[in-house]
Length: 439
Image (cartoon, rainbow, N blue to C red; front, side, top):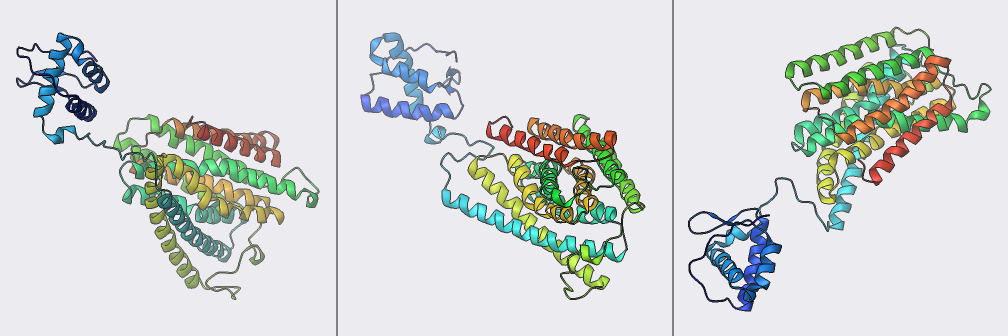
């Protein structure tokens, strides 16, 4: 920076070497406080530049002009109170250059404990919803695309809500948006990859391999709804942030999801769910026909566990991201969907082994429709909904993976495991972008 030097009328005696070095250290601290030095008259004497002033001080005895300038600065420094030499604190929490390993390990353990509570609650909750679907004699498409899908998506529903309500203004919003964007991405890439791999591993049991035994009408409907609803939700990020516009888009997404549910419930193309397809009701383990009251108690109890685990998760992700200097958005986008959504999607592997491909794929696509509509509506209402480059890149990978499967069903009227395996390549691209610092 350019320096503004005031004329000096009086000459001071040269300071000692030790005093000179002490003042240099004081000026270094003062320069970090981002404040200009001023002389007695209040005029700016010199803009802070620790390196520049240190050079002048080192040359103190080599010229009368430099001597006069430095003596004026030193005289001002000596008159300033000590608090002026304390660097200003940044508004953002400082990144720990040498984080405490024990604290980080403890944070990870608490996150794992929170996820265990969420998974326990989600498992019990999903089991209750599936039994409710069985009692209502609903089809595979309805149970897979709505009840099982919404049940497994509930943790990703509550994590954003809890983070928006109880998290900090910055980190809480990043965690919530990360969970919202990360869930459809994980479902459309990694979950589809695992399902496709399960089909390949069971190919000897399939006479019609590689054609999957899916109801193409159900799958095409699910993917079409997801692509349309998710496009509307992402497009809202580019619109003016007027409350009226945000409320309109959020209501539109919820209404369209309601229409999707009605179409699914009216579908008659699938077989009804039988008791052999379901695990026993956890709150009535030995009963083949549990009462609705028992099922209701199971659902409410599991919901409490999910809320408790979500609150623990949000708090610990905020703490851990601050300690490690990692974006809460990236951390939530990776950890939340994999830990809470992916384990339940291994149910699809079991259904693939039983030859129930519609139920397996519907569990994934139905959750995607729910995540792309209702959950994004929550984000639109509760946040500014400004998506950065990392979020938009992840969305693009999601569209590419799901669009590939949709095009095969739409054009060829069937689905093959090779198309689902392609989702793994999109998730691999995401990991590479993270590791290389592109996101």
